[in-house]
Length: 305
Image 1 (cartoon, rainbow, N blue to C red):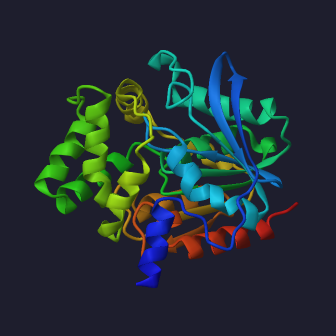
Image 2: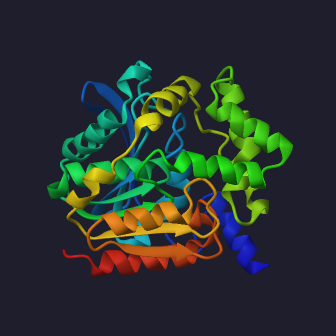
């Protein structure tokens, strides 16, 4: 019971009772011709944090990962990608993955940061892999969670959704991928419907949905990324260029970016480490929050300074 309560607290981003909240800053940062909403939490070694969910924002990530800033001694930098959330809603054609990777380097430079840790969650992990390959001198370490290195994850995700989803969830899943949704509110409702698929413990989905009431959804940019970027996404040829220590993490029960996708990244990135969280779905930072924090702390502590 106590463990489930802790996981429910992690799902809404509640920090441990003994942790003093870290200092927090908010910026409207001008980067590569657009304005990005940026939040900085904590003091210490900089860590760039890339959010997932094309068409959503970083608010959920701030809630779940922000509490790690103080115990890990990090200055964690979160932002909404261009065209997303509270950042400037530029035309979606400007929101290519190549551009978002360039923006990540632009955020680091605009804040005057030296080499930083990089943490990418879900789609943010896709972008993090590309960033690490293209800007090796900008990074201390790379960690990705629930990521994939190519479009091949999509067929695996669809097969898993078909096998695991209820009829309502399957209909919502299909609408998120086939372009049939109409409007940002419909996008929100579809994501809320399939949220249980993201957890090994499906009971955590309700709390996760409730905590995301302030997430700003933009269907147009999701459709652009899904239809134009995912269709040809393949950064596998770049991964051999990643030079920094790399940690690949995945939940054993991740349906959308399954373990085999993490194993492929682990094979292709030189000297990468792989950790599988046995009681997690797509979000081990929520379902096994203590183990996730401990693994990340060990990894960062072992990295060259």
